[in-house]
Length: 399
Image (tube, rainbow, N blue to C red; front, side, top):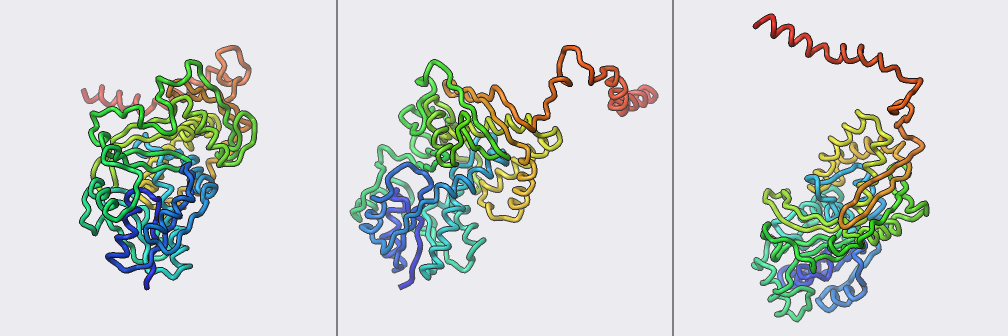
């Protein structure tokens, strides 16, 4: 019997895929579940997969690798998709898919399978990763094949096969969670005029319910990588977990947006990224202190392209590898501390310091100084404005 490795979460879609694969392909199904910090007990997932018909279940702890090798590179790049989305789902999929290929090769499987819909971005992220590492593997995407057309129909299929699922027709949101964020889509959120209801939030309190006094947090970085909170050194998982707690308690990191999916349509969702919002604000402020103007401007331009590559599933492309090399050079002096103020949903970097600071108080002061001659500005302006002067003279001559 041929084998297939299924990306399994225990949610609605992947729960019904196991019996569907056996009925329609006759494959032996090996379920793979990656712990990327979704914050729930994963051991019941094993039993559920086996009861649903899987022959074997892999549950692997990839949290540290996820934060160190996938979250932090995006943070260093300053990559935000369409100026709002911090890419939480986007960079989790390549890690999962890469491990699925490794398991498929170990088990001698002929195919991998995912539960991503034919309308979404995740199908691309999974499958581009498979192509990058083993293009000979077959990819099965049930949502592109079966007759099920809605989550309501998927729920009916699950009931008909005696499979418990964590959603109902009344509570039908599609959510994806990892240590970086949680996303919410579907249901009443599909109407952009509907404001998200407070009961939706999982990682954060509603901003209006946050404390009336601000919370200050000091984040320390070494070469662009966050290393400490309040002067206390922490590992990547511990640090992000604590920032999620602090940000969530202050209503920080909620984003509601209509975004452009890769497949061409717009979608509407809600993202909660409390710790990530703090890290982006702090990292950006430290770069302003330690990077020169041209480097900072170029980095800002490339950050948009970097975010698009990640969003589109090109994590393992040559272009992203080249951009990573550029980013790493820029981060050599991004070391120091940033103080961030959290207050009722706002997240503001209010102070920064670095041994590599390019800010020179003696140069910038409005008081008396001995190292900058203000007379030099006259010659600079004359030369800098020379093209404008020549243009004006020509226009006057030509009438």
